[in-house]
Image 1 (cartoon, one colour):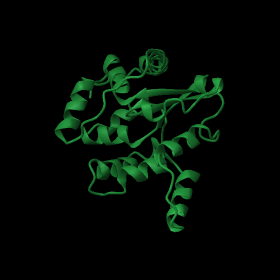
Image 2 (cartoon, helix red, strand yellow; image 1 turned 90 degrees about the vertical axis):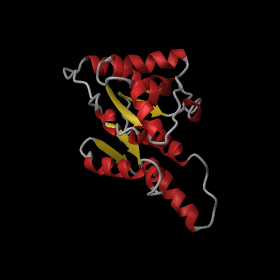
Image 3 (cartoon, helix red, strand yellow; image 1 turned 60 degrees about the horizontal axis):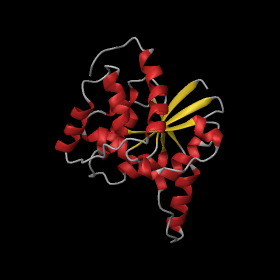
Image 4 (cartoon, helix red, strand yellow; image 1 turned 45 degrees about the vertical axis):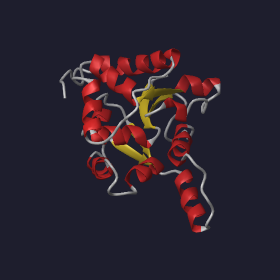
Length: 200
């Protein structure tokens, strides 16, 4: 395995970081950031929702670093609405699974770091041995903690405090130990190879 990508698995990480004014923290490892279109849609469809405007502006301003992935999942969702059929639940998560398993966006020699607010949303989603080696889960808090340990940011707790002050009470959940260490190891390899040690 060589290349590593960050795949946003649900709206939680985007909303939390937007509320904290810290969306650019997703770019600090210098990795490609993949955002399924359904997740961007869910996070921004209500223009007055917390973080919605910032997320939309960020996705446009950082277009060179962020890839918004069109999915069949979102297309099917809109088709269901037009037909008056109640769509399946978990729109964003289902779109992310589609992206993770779609080789044009994630090749067989590449790994995906799935960033989620709460791993319970995707626990058990990837069950094959091949998936288990290629697709790793990491919570928002674990991600920020890794950035703090690598001296990329001052404090993960500060980010959560800013988000809370803005009205976002986000989960600080971590993954089970084995998956936690697998994801942290992959991310830390990238962070340790970076020459840029500046704090934000």
